[in-house]
Image 1: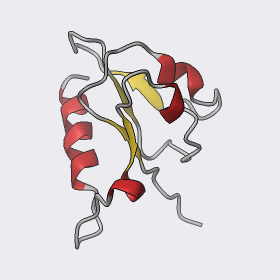
Image 2: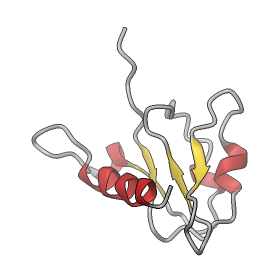
Image 3: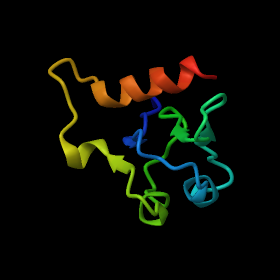
Length: 93
């Protein structure tokens, strides 16, 4: 069975509080702090995310979104907004 990537993502309004990181189940650990980001913002590794959604309600600034609920789907099947944010996070890693 092929692994399915998660659908949750953190947008650029993240304030770096870390609540999401603490909410992510220990064995999953899909949330990480973006290195070199002056605000200490967080990002989600989509291939590790299990879509539990524990992180979203704990975010004080509501910057964690479910791409399925927001319709961020392109004809090619890619989540363009998530990819933009992941590229931003990787560039600072």
